[in-house]
Length: 247
Image (tube, rainbow, N blue to C red; front, top):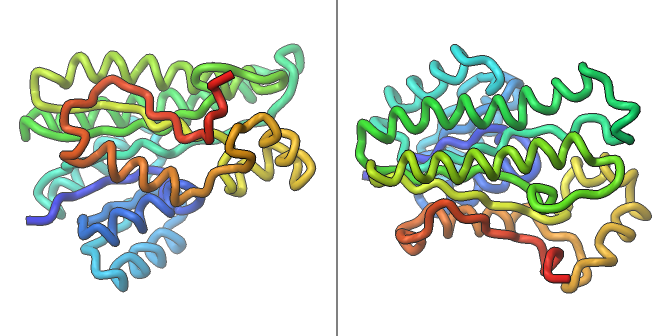
């Protein structure tokens, strides 16, 4: 029986490419997001690749919505073998002194509450199965920061802390929990964060490999860390960053 992967925030960027990568590897793929039409179209695209694929409409910041998402995937495929908590937002970059309660909450509702709720229900399902692999998508900003990125960086630091706790709680049940932490990756989010080509050039100037990563490079890292080839790896952060944090 094919294994099943659930990917949140799967309709663009890293999430989309990760869904394609798992489909090409022969997994059943459940993709989640907040846009019904786009989600259904993407599920159809994944089926053309030969995968059994379903779209689940969900907002990861809503407890009941996350519970229903996990239940629907288990009902459709019989299990969740891999979960990738990718849904996230960069918010509104700017100095801390200019942040409002609303701008802070909007980031934490998705990036932190969304991951926490996803972990809650994914772990419950996997504990019953006595197996599973969960990957939380963080960022190099989960271990560092830059001016005007305080809120986003704080949210990704929280994701990495949640990963460690979940790894400890899941280990007795055969569940591995890890983080994949991309560096600057050529997605629409990177263009929004940097303002375009000039900003990307400045951000990537400090990367030893001299460029931004691609969504497929992050996707391939997820396929690896989710697989049995990484069966003794849990509670870790896999940086996919071109050497960004070596200095």
